[in-house]
Amino acid sequence: MVHLREGVKLMNKIIVIAAFCCFIFPCVSEEPATPCLLGSSSTPLLASTAERIQNILLAVEQIDGIILKPGESFSFNETVGERTLAAGFLSAPAIVHAKLQDVVGGGICQVSSTLFNAVLLSDLKIVERHRHHTPINYLPLGMDATISWGTKDFRFKNTSPGRIKIVGRVTDKTVNFEIYGETALQDELRLETEIIESPSLLPEEESEPGLEIALYRVRLKKGKIIAREFIHRDFYPARTIQK
Image 1: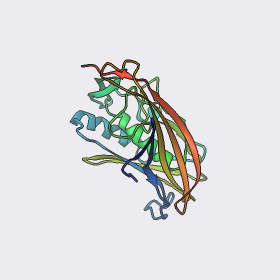
Image 2: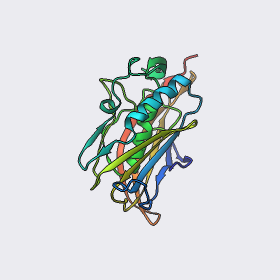
Image 3: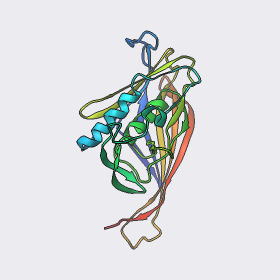
Image 4: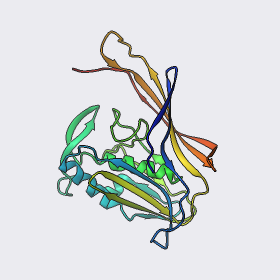
């Protein structure tokens, strides 16, 4: 479930709360083997090209319906496969070494990033995750998960007591993932980030500050925080804006 980001700035630290939140859902899925919605995530397609949307559709189709038994792991690269023209993927914009370039399969990092958030809100264990070279525009800082064939993967493990099922879909406006399980979560979950800005080393030039982002998974019972789990820390160095 998506919530608008709220920021509280203290000196050079910005605490972002309730960027994504998952409540305890009743077990009412139409799938009898996995009736409980554990967590979900949705991201906007914004001004995506037809080629980018085609790539996203192909990746989501490969993931939709995957079932993992307790202890089994999911690999994005193994599931989606190599992004080639022969596999139906098209050339579309993607971030490559901090620059936007057309590559075959461009755009599917939005699929891995959306799934990453659904996994976190389903209380599952992240095994491998990488950030983009530069911040992306469809998720808050620290909540993305980039992938690259042969070098960077997104992997997670089913640490729930029962089987889980991944349900993915693409609408004309959003990319969506829901994860169902056999047993409902006992706690409400939400994601929070703490962002610390550091000034540019060249303040006389037009530049962007350095950013250090810490992501946490927060557990709540009846609206009260009972635990705060550190997930990862990202760092984007200060940089001069190229004109």
